[in-house]
Amino acid sequence: MADLFLEVKNITKTFEGVKALDNVDLSIGKGEVHCLVGENGSGKSTLIKIIGGVHRPDSGAIIINGAETRTLNSIESIRSGVQIIYQDLSLFPNMTVAENIAMNQMLESNSRIVNWKTMYGEAKKALEEIGEEIDLNEKVENLPMARKQIVAISRALTQNAKLIIMDEATSAITKEEVNHLFEVISKLQKKGIAILFVSHKLNEVFEIAEKVTIIKDGKKVGDYSASELDNDKLVFLMTGQNFRAEPYKFNAGAADTVLSVRNLSKAGQFSNISFDLKRGEILGITGLIGSGRTETALALFGLNRPDSGEIKIGGRIVNITGPAGAIANGIAYLPEDRLSQGLFVEQSIGSNIIITILTGLLNRLKILVNSRQEAAKNYWIQKLAIKTPSHLAPANSLSGGNQQRVVLAKWLAIKPAVFILDGPTIGIDIGSKHTIHEIIRGLAKEGMAIIMISDEIPEIMDNCNRVLIMARGRIVKEITDASSVKAEEVFELISRDAGMGAAG
Ligand SMILES: Nc1ncnc2c1ncn2[C@@H]1O[C@H](COP(=O)(O)OP(=O)(O)OP(=O)(O)O)[C@@H](O)[C@H]1O
Ligand SMILES: [Mg+2]
Image (cartoon, rainbow, N blue to C red; front, side, top):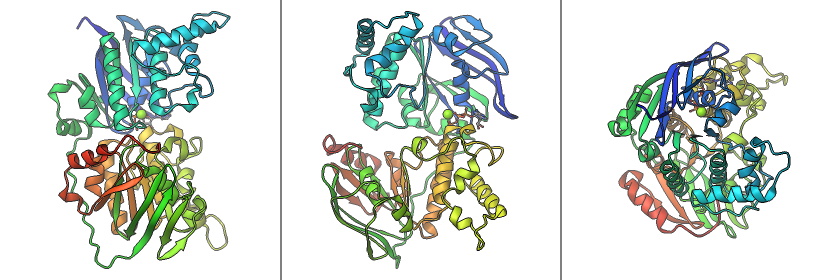
């Protein structure tokens, strides 16, 4: 294999006694699209940070373009053509598109005076290289996520990227945007740029990967040509298990209606939304971006004031003016954007979990009973299989997917009557997805009423007894027996009406 761009050999990395990587190898050919897959906490991001010179491995070698580097730091990594696009993209939000694209290169070239004209030229060139057009004067903070990614990719191009690494680039963008990103990736590939792509969505892996490297518990399981794998085989290699989802059965019987929504409307976002939700139900809401599903959810949680309409909880009309009011009425909301909205990353995992239930843990004398606190923290760590040596560890020592679980735990801990989950398994690996679905079903069986919002149609179809499809701010279809409808039909319904309406 003469044409390797990157070879990583026998890499081991330990964090405070936790072996994140154990003797891992990875080889990426020039211009190859390579996927790195594995469960949450298996070591993917750690490996990427080692290639990027952010973490120093305990042992092992990194060979870039045939040259072995012993002490790789981030500048050397960039100089040898490695560019990492992290989930947060590391852009400067209040600077323009042009500045973001060209700034690093200007700094790198050591010119003391920033030449604005050159900078604009460079930025324009980089965008043209991948056939994209974005207003160079626009501030990056005003761009949607998918456009920001294009800015980050263009920035990588100005620095002569030979390998672009994307760590879970698709978890915050829609299906259409993913398709667009994949077109950009194939343009990059034609230029001989290799891509290392991390995603928990295995259909994406099959769509773009030529090669797949699988890691599990910090060890390499193997590397494969994508053509040697199929979904079941890949899942088995990643998890050591096979999963088969059974549709969720809900027995309407005499279940009480907990939530009634009537003619909820907000100009430009959603109109005439009406539905009932019973104890024990898992109601799915799906639709493309702009369908109004998230705006509707936010209205139920008091974060988006509707213009008109009615919300009833337990038969009583409620006026929900903010999250505190929603929580007081028994409604909890797991936001889609959990990494920025849900976690105090420097605080311990344990305090993050119990933050919402502190009042419930106060005993009569209003003293926080330590043993109860401990019990609650450990209960949720165990129940959601959060991978950590201790609840005392800070939340930012967890892998991405495990941070997501902490946010989930903190809302579950208040045992709401109505739980709205927006993208409940974004960033969660396939095995844990299964676990989380089981937990959600279990909560519904105990009587919680659940609204599950998701882009992933299989997730909705397998877990919800009833599904509302939204498009352009309206409910366009209700599926009362999810097991009777095929995923393709749902996708068809969702897409047919798309293309207008509000954002989000
Ligand atoms: N800075 C750190 N301090 C302590 N432990 C860490 C640190 N970074 C990572 N770890 C640990 O290393 C292991 C691997 O984490 P890593 O983030 O590489 O996983 P991942 O495969 O990217 O998972 P995910 O799919 O959830 O993003 C985990 O057990 C994690 O808790
Ligand atoms: Mg990660």
